[in-house]
Length: 117
Length: 440
Image (cartoon, rainbow over all chains, first blue to last red):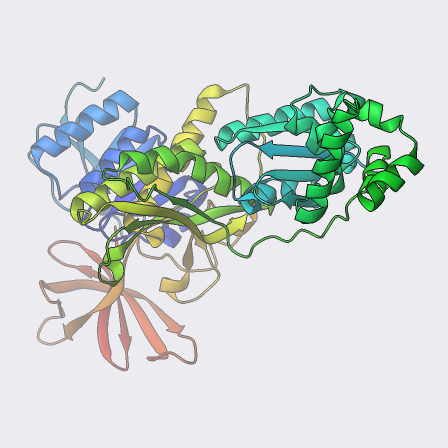
């Protein structure tokens, strides 16, 4: 499974991903700088990733809709990460993740679900 | 003669033959050229790899790729090969069929000695008047008569046609840099980019083939567009860099990326004069590696090609250091636990033990942010844009930097804030407290 991780400046720690068992052979890191929209459009259109992960705080509704259409066309899962939940109608699924019990557990809550079986 | 087989490529239009010679260097190191007209390759050593018919076919394909035309012929010596190519006789034709006018090609196949060639030309004219029409007839003439009538040139011609002597093969050497240049017609320089794109593809092919012959491929190419009028410094020659991050990107894809980059560059900064020259300069190379194409899974091949194309496109636009894979590294310092690499790390590179280190935060700040910790009356941590009470402090870890760095010692803590429940990774050093990462 090939994944693209796109941020304006890479802040994710690949070693932490490696510690959690993620296979780093499959992740391409893209530091988009000021060209976030262009990078995501290119990455989605290429159709060679099963999943693309991006920072969710940076886009307008129109841009989100465009990425949604591209990801549906290319059968790519598109994940947007953000600190706070957004009241956008575009995402199919909105999930809140919280740690509990120190570092040992993660609690997931579905905030919105649209058209997902 | 010693069993040589010589392939001659005779070009109808003058060419810069050094570049062509380098393309065929992959097949044989024994190459010489005749001015700007013809190339000779000694291919007897290739017999175990290719038959002559296959070699001719492959040569034709190569010439088509680089948009060049040449007549081809194979013979036991340079003179015969050149004559067969010049007079366009089919493969397998005997030299006896060559017209008598082929004699100058025998005495001076490399075109180095004008006087000898001129004498051979006169000799051929005289022989034609005497009724000697072709090389076959020439071979029936007694050698003594030829020597007495035409002296050295006649004797040389006879021995060469017999195959008893040939020109010396001088060693061929590759040029240091692999650059391709095209000069537009001075009377009508390029006013738009269309002529540039028209020339770009065959130039990319030639460059790639020349590098391939050296066992290399280009990782970075600079396209230089030279404007015709005297303009200041960087204006005169516009330089556009292309980065080909990953291997197995086809020339078609490189051309598409180049085209996009040129258009973007010219749109941002329009040209001030017409173009008189374009150049491709290879600025960085890497060893050429081959893989087996998966012909049973076409979809996978297409996806891979799409991936390589995307990476090259991203690297060209954003810079090479902005597109990378990550490879873990054995180091105690969190910022040195991994390194960016151009290609996906191999299995053996992922053998660094995961459990060796305590858990690291998922977000690591490129530059630690200074913090203030106040312990009384409440334990509060303050940063540039937040201030929160601390709930717990745990997991003390002492790390030492490399001896040449400062500060040398960092004491790390895992702080959990009371209100927002953020998990912060903070360290204390000689210079104070800093936020280095966030556990998410």
